[in-house]
Image (cartoon, rainbow, N blue to C red):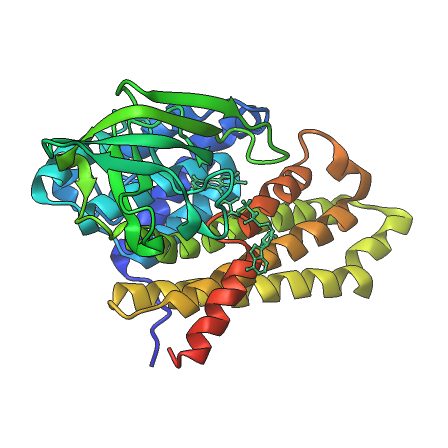
Length: 383
Ligand SMILES: Cc1cc2nc3c(=O)[nH]c(=O)nc-3n(C[C@H](O)[C@H](O)[C@H](O)COP(=O)(O)OP(=O)(O)OC[C@H]3O[C@@H](n4cnc5c(N)ncnc54)[C@H](O)[C@@H]3O)c2cc1C
């Protein structure tokens, strides 16, 4: 039987995130919505341990579960999605250093990443010609003749926090003709010569999250900064995405909740002829449908997390949770736009912001189409 009751530890982590979001982040969310990067907020989150929710306490994390991680992300996203995505990518980079890094790498990179000294961590997989088909990436890392370092060349695109991160987890080909098996992962120090930040993307939503292109030109990466053996970079990326997809589902549901809460808060204030809006079936059925779908999506996210926590392969469940939760967030925010009507078009409208912020969740960490490919492939393989 599945236990849907969160543990005391999970509830404690959720409360940490919720209290911070409502007491402090809420006041800053409008500024982030207008484009201010949440520097102070991510440092505060690091101070609370929320930049390394699953990382060991000894290294500055909270030693929590995947369930706790998703509960916390949902709380932060409900108040500020830009802060939530910055937090999510940083957690993901820390998780990969924990999983694939050796002791020296963990001791070097995790304390500054989790304490906020680094501001954020960044994950650089996508390229101008390699988004959904990540295995076709063309950045390359060539081992020097004396074997002491790699020389990294290439361009990455759409990289969250790429300009503010203290460490960038970069996927590059060490064997260009070997497809996915030729990809390796590197922990790159952005202060290294040859690391250049390119264009800052101006997005319709998530305006406080920084999204940039990166260019590497003759960048020397010491051999000890390769994460795991050569050739496991694609595995590192896919492992990150399995966990990350649950987090994006949680993030999308937090955004959807903020839109629904704003609409529910508004309805009782409507008077006279508008009363039908409050009690009529056209509205009440919509509200019921939104809440029901969000509940179903949250159960899917929690189940994928619970499997992950139990060490069970969960690529299919994570993809199902991501596609259902993010498409639900699309449905909910669209419906809330209809119910809120003109007021949702005002720049500071919570509903309008949620509508814009929710869209990207169906794109990053694998589009909805890619999730469906993963689900079907796993089913065909009997997994
Ligand atoms: C705000 C933002 C932040 C991001 N942050 C990061 C980050 O931190 N790190 C990182 O590495 N990347 C990041 N990304 C990149 C993101 O992961 C990619 O945008 C995503 O993987 C899709 O790639 P693409 O945009 O190049 O679309 P494409 O791969 O070019 O796809 C275009 C369309 O074709 C569809 N499609 C593609 N292949 C198939 C297929 N086989 N069958 C059916 N349909 C298909 C897609 O679903 C999509 O609708 C970010 C993107 C955004 C928008």
